[in-house]
Amino acid sequence: MLKFIRRYIKKHKSFPFFKINKSPHPLFVIVEELEHTCQTEAERVLYQKLRMLMYYPTPQYRMNRFVVNIALIPYRIALIEQKKGLNERRIIKTLNRKGWSVIFYQPQQILHEEHKYVNRIVALTEEQTPRSL
Image (tube, rainbow, N blue to C red; front, side):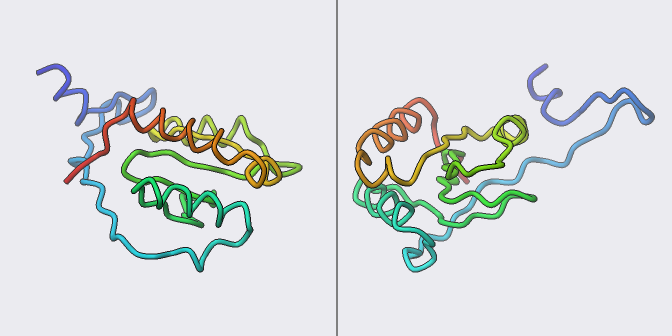
């Protein structure tokens, strides 16, 4: 019962001190072939490997002010390319608050050792259950 109440009532430091949240909406993903939206070769390789393993990745997924290069929405896994000047800690903190796991990758490593990242993604998906309808 306590878990049910915590899901819908949130405590704040300022007025109003308690806020009632709306019921969480189910995650729904339309399955499409989105390989043409991949912008780099590393994204395309990751997309193809994940599709071969029967996952449905979404390239260039927009989440608030961040653009996730590849997202596995039902598992809440975000794959983001490492770039110079990217504040990784802020991205991780923001997405973890929303329940997402974040994996940063370098494009050259994906092109040479894609199995390393794919195995890490598969391990994360086995730990989590997808959010269903």
